Length: 305
Ligand SMILES: NC(=O)c1ccc[n+]([C@@H]2O[C@H](COP(=O)([O-])OP(=O)(O)OC[C@H]3O[C@@H](n4cnc5c(N)ncnc54)[C@H](O)[C@@H]3O)[C@@H](O)[C@H]2O)c1
Image 1 (cartoon, rainbow, N blue to C red):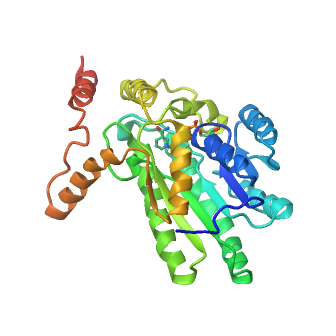
Image 2: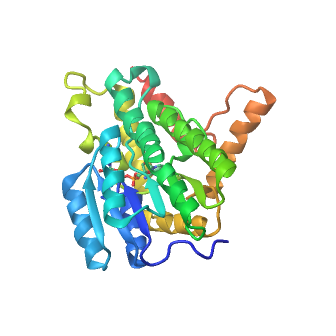
Image 3: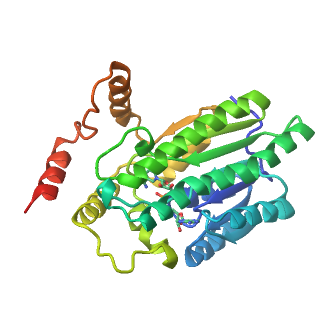
């Protein structure tokens, strides 16, 4: 267990700080007396978060950016160092969801979701890891944590969640590799991956922040996309674990130096089945086998004439 972790005056960089997990972790960090770099693409949500975090007494640097854009994440890195120095916690968390049958995603769907969910994390890792390693080399008491938000959809492949599954598997791969690579060079900078199941946040309404240049102006959503939207909304809304609880699980995992962070450990049974499929060369099992009603509804809705 780490004694040093996250003291008053340490700095947290949080992307997606305007809502959901990002906002909840920002609140917890502010309560600990940390400096917060609150980054988000949605200006009004960011402004609300800034006001609230300041009211908690935290020094805040609000930073409006699109994490998919390399130069904007680089600028956030420079602004962070200038204002607070090298951060101790980097939460690469901003993400968006889009569902539907995988062949029905448009090129822009792929570009949007991969851009935010995968490249956003890659940019955060690329910009902040060298700074953190340098800080560790200079100061033997420095400790840094990089937490990337993936999903249970990074460990199993539920149907009709197309590009989202692909993006989150990439985040798990990126994070596991980061963990291995960091362990080659440092004992002071640590990687973690957050894999939540369904939790009530704004994720079902991700389209609110979709940039104009990546929207599908003439394409009506397909049936599978409408079904995915409705099912995600329902699943997210019915979750019993709150975003605030997940933010606390993140801090607990940093303290305990745990890499994998789950919101619903019971859902890991489907991961075990998938890995057994891989090991035993079985064809992929149904990831919805523990929610047969959901699978039946999905099949019926998609096949309805
Ligand atoms: N809520 C769930 O059930 C769930 C489950 C698994 C994984 N996740 C992941 O959790 C992460 C956080 O999402 P959330 O559930 O808190 O949803 P949310 O919509 O409440 O929060 C996401 C935040 O990211 C911001 N954002 C979106 N695009 C951005 C961009 N291009 N650049 C910067 N900021 C951007 C949004 O404005 C928003 O404030 C995402 O990566 C999501 O995929 C969520």
